[in-house]
Length: 490
Picture 1 (cartoon, rainbow, N blue to C red):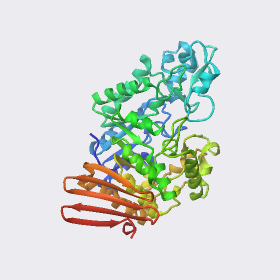
Picture 2 (cartoon, rainbow, N blue to C red):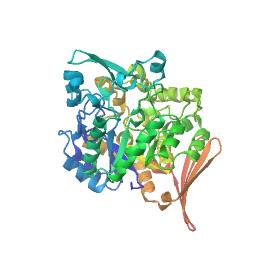
Picture 3 (tube, rainbow, N blue to C red):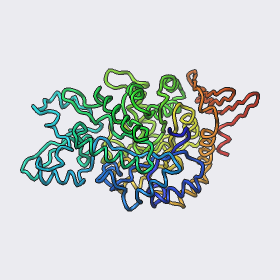
Picture 4 (cartoon, rainbow, N blue to C red):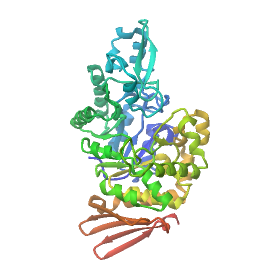
């Protein structure tokens, strides 16, 4: 089972400027005792593809520039180790797809990849195409000429360099089985099912989170469990979908939490946050920031389904992020950047809060007191600001929050009061026994109280958004300790 302690989300090379061994040294050195586990973002060949490793050429190989499977084993020996099973797609540069491009249907790898014809053998109507849900604008099909003289419409949910896998056929099953087995043999004990909501496509549907998708997640989770690994479903969707998915897998992400915390801090109103914390899945990972942007769709309405926030509140949320970041986030989001996302704002969480140290600690405290196991992204750990130089160089919107660090930057960051305050919050979350107990929450418009209780041990976070006051109260028997978040900055 995953430890109930704060976990780190990071790339091996971007946090250290080096490799997997350097990451292990950092965790056992300056960050000793801080994290119970690591979500090691794609370390596959190559780490520097068009989507920072989420377009693997060889999903079963470690990029030799940052290490080997032996290095993965060493890291996983001391920490919970999470890796991404990229369920939906593989790189167009993979040897399998290159063989398909060269030979067409004569390729022995033809069945591995999904085409329009596979799902719509009798042709696709305009209505059927419009019904397909895609996280980016435009068609989800890319016509590509092959060596047999034919041009085929390959399914490309995300980009034309990420070719969707046909997970229903033997070739797709074998491909993912190979990766799962490799993970299991090398001390990976948690699998993040990346983009799993898009894996199953059926004619006449929106091809996203279908009933068959839930069945598929059940089987994939059972398969990973049999190999000794837990699974985490990574799905950005309506909040009720997360509640439903949570019943089918080991854990889900609480992607509604980050925008709801921002909304509370922006409006001094905790109603939506409290409503969510009363119904949110308990078997979840909590995040504020990740290698992706700040999810918006997870708190908002979808179609005729009302959201935790309404459309006007979502618009205000997005515009406030842009204003707080001096419009840097606007330069990295939507049509301004090459990776156009319909449901995310690209910005560091710290800059989304206007680089306000107190607000940032309040946000982290709420995250740590919310149900679930908290994860902290490496940029968030060091309160990193938007990397406009990297964005200008790559023109990839998400790179605004994917900085390259080194030992000097880390040393300087660790000295910042906000980072020292965050480390103290992490210590409280990792060591207080009550976090293994029962959770409850209550609120009244501009304030909320998040409480954990185990036997005679209790810990409570009280936040008054209007007065910008936040207090942690620890009670054991007749003893009581009060910690103001303002004090953590001094």
